[in-house]
Each structure stands twice: as structure tokens, then as C-alpha cells.
Amino acid sequence: MEHDRGWREPVVASATGAQEASADGEGRRAESWRPDGPAPATAGVTGVTGVTSPQRLVRDGLVIAVDGPGGSGKSTAAREIARRLGLRYLDTGAMYRAVTQLALESRIDIEDHNAVAELAERAVLTIGTSPDNPTIAVNGEPVDDLIRTRAVTNAVSAVAAVPAVRRRLVIRQQQIITEASPVGIVVEGRDIGSVVAPNAPVKVFLTASTEVRALRRSHQLGERGVDDVARTLAELDRRDALDSTRAADPLAVPDDAIVLDSTALSVQDVVDEVLRHCEQASARAS
Ligand code: DC
Image 1 (tube, rainbow, N blue to C red):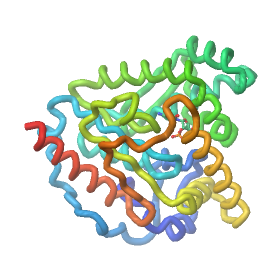
Image 2 (image 1 turned 180 degrees about the vertical axis):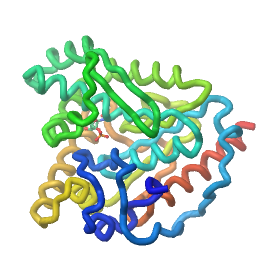
Image 3 (image 1 turned 30 degrees about the horizontal axis):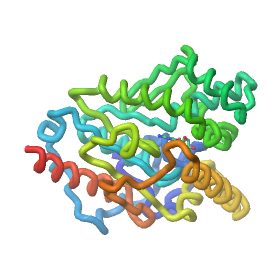
Image 4 (image 1 turned 30 degrees about the vertical axis):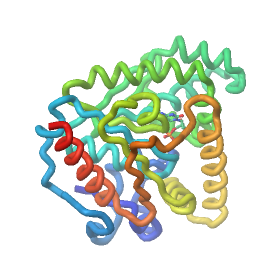
């Protein structure tokens, strides 16, 4: 399947121009990845391709938390894990992006915390949790494409740092997790293992070098130039700093998370490793 492929050779895969533009660097349009050449062989981690038993793993409504910085490949990996296990999928970053999009559209000053908090309080988010077609609408308007623009990407860290916005969205995220039971759900974000679902039996923290994250993102945007990559890298650095140093629920590695560095891995490597940990969690629970 095409969405199994990707990452290990970001430069080679993207130099073909085969990937559609996406402004968020997380491979949200993973289905459109068509890296030319052979699928990456599974290596670097112990693989369990094809042996996972969803029935065994999800009988209690499994929650898998996937955290990590932008461009680390969370979305592509999280969606594939959800597909493989027959779980729902929630992209919490999309929720912060949707509030940001609404704030920009409403011409609200995103530094005005009270105004942003009020907006978030009133906004009705409708979220589809299929890993094949995750959707999000604000006040009835689909915003799936609008939330991936560079304008939203560059403004969202400020909105996500507002404590009242976080409180509101965390409650909504916890509702969605509850509603996904007994099927189970893969939830991706920055604070899932630490704040949103601290009891999740499987927690993954995905990283990648800043350079590789910037390269992936630039290539997703269809950029080729050294200057473009440098600009993307600077933006990523800025967002990382904001997300990691904010007072409310900063990006942090939960103590009990599996830390995976995807710099030199394929999507399949990462998925296999997470499924292996799911098997172990399932064995521990039974
Ligand atoms: O994963 P992303 O790039 O779509 O996230 C968008 C922003 O939202 C980013 O600045 C981090 C923030 N975010 C957050 O603070 N907490 C989450 N659970 C998810 C995203």
C-alpha cells in the first residue's frame, strides 16, 4: 500500500516531485505519497509486519498516544497504526489549527488571549475520526485545507499557548477518546501522553533531526531551494521553541513513552515498532 512508504530517503523520494503540497510537514496527505523506487525494506528495528491481532489488542478500547514535534512524521505513522489496528484516529493539532483559522478569519488579534479564548469557547468543532479520511469543520464549515496554510501554521503556536484554549480543547479531545470506546483510538499531538490521555497503555514520542524535518516539510511544499529549506528550518525552530517552553502543557516526553527517532527510518519501521509495543502492552494486560 502506498501509505506504507516514505521518509527514509526524504530527499530522493521528494525530488521526484511525486508528493502533493501540504503545509504542515506531517504528511497529512499521506495517501498521496508516491515515492518512486522500491518500498523501503524494514530494517533498523524489529519488525512484526502482518502479525498484529487487532481483536486481541483493542478489546478494551486501546488508546495509543503519539506525541512529538512538527515534521517528526506523527500523522503518517499514527494514521497507519490506526488503519492496521482498526482504530479511530484523532489529530489534535488540527483542532488548534481550526481555532487559529477561525481567529485569523475573524480578524482577532491572536495575542489577545481573552478574545481567542472566547472564540474557542464558542467555536463548534465537528471532527471525523476515520484514519482514511479525517475531517474537521468549524461552525459547520469544513476547514481541512484552510488549516494547512502557512499563515495558520505560523500563527498556531501562539493560539495553542493560551491556557483557556487548551482547557477547552483537552476536554473535547477526552470526549472524543471516550466516544471511540470500545473500538479504541490513536491520538496524536504534543501533550497526549502527559495531559490528554495520561493512562494510555501505549505512548510513543516521535522525533527526527530538525534538518530532516525541515527537508520533509519543504519537499512536501514542493520547494527546492536551499533558501526555502533554511526558511522552513527557522520556522520549525521557532515553533519548537514556542511549543516546548510555553507554560501550559508544553511539549515534553512522558516518562513512560517509547522514544523513536524517525530520522533514518521508514514509516513502516516506525509502525512495526509501535505495533510491537502494542503486543507487549496487550500481553501485560492479559
Ligand atoms: O501537529 P501540528 O503541527 O498540526 O500542531 C499545530 C500546533 O498545535 C503546534 O503549534 C503545536 C500545537 N499543539 C499542541 O499544543 N498540543 C497538541 N496536542 C497538538 C498540537
